[in-house]
Amino acid sequence: MVDTNTAVRAPEASNPHEACKAVVETLARIGDKWTVMVVGALSQGPIRYNEIHRRVEGISQRMLTLTLKGLEQDGLVTRTMYPTIPPRVDYELTELGRSLIVPLKTLAEWARENRPAMLAAREAFRTRG
Amino acid sequence: MVDTNTAVRAPEASNPHEACKAVVETLARIGDKWTVMVVGALSQGPIRYNEIHRRVEGISQRMLTLTLKGLEQDGLVTRTMYPTIPPRVDYELTELGRSLIVPLKTLAEWARENRPAMLAAREAFRTRG
DNA sequence: CGGCATCCGTATAGATACTG
DNA sequence: CAGTATCTATACGGATGCCG
Image 1 (spheres, rainbow over the protein chains, first blue to last red):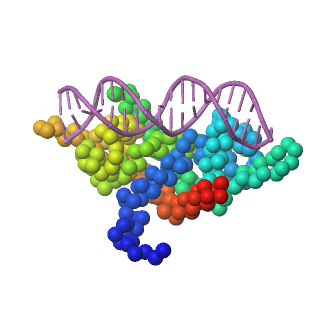
Image 2 (image 1 turned 90 degrees about the horizontal axis):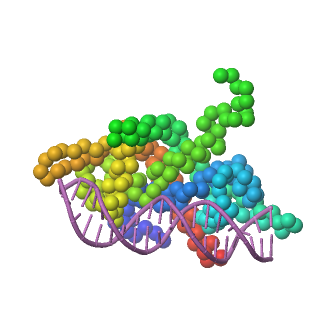
C-alpha cells in the first residue's frame, strides 16, 4: 500500500489535531482505572495471575481478568499457560508493552513535578470559590 | 533523615509503585474523553468558548463547560471574562497547563509509532480468536 | 489456581431545552 | 455568546457465586 493520497489526508502525524486524536485514542486504552497499575506490576518481569492480584491493591478478579485480556488483545502482554495441577498462568509484557513504559515514565515525571501545584490550585479554588 | 528503613518503605518517588500511583492519578484527571482535546485546542493560544466548541468536534456544551471548569480548578487553564455585550470569555493555558503538553507529546509519539502494531495485534486476535 | 457468569449500583456523558 | 438545568442511556466497575 503505497501512499497515494498522503498529503491530502494528513501531512504527518506531527499536525496537532491528528496528534491529539492519537493521544486521545491511546488514553482511551491505557487511561482506565487499572491498566497502568497492571503494566507496572508486570514491568519487573513475568508473574502469575495471583501475584498480580496481590500487587495491584484493590483490584477485583473480574477487573484483573478484563484488563489482562485487553492488554493481551492489544499485543502488550503475553499469556502463557502451564497445564500443571494446579494450573499456572504467567503474564509478561511484550516488547510493545515494555515500550509503553517510556511515555509512562515521562508522565510519572510530570506528575511528580506538577501534581503538588495541581492539588494546591484545586485547594485554592475550593477555598476562594 | 538518614535511611533507617529506606529499602522497605520507598526511597523516592522513583520507586515503581509510587510512580505508578502518580501516573494513575494523573491519568484519572486527563484521561477522560475530552480534556486532552480541549488542551489541544488551547495549545495554540487563548481562544473563546465557542471557538473551542467548534474546534473540539463532537463535544456538547455541557461537557465543554465541565471540562473547562475542571481544568480551571486544577490550575491548568485561566478563564477571563470581558463584560461586553455580547459577553466574551477567553480561555488560556497556564504555565502548568502548557507544561502538560510535554508528556502529551511523548504519548503522541508513542501512539504514532506503536498504534499500528496495537491495531494489528487486535485484528490478529479477533481473527484467530 | 485461574478464571467466568451474573447481578447491580454508580459515574460518565449525550440530548434537549432554557437563561443572563 | 456563554453558559445552566434536567433527563436519560450506557459503560465502568464492584460483589458474589460457580467451574475446570
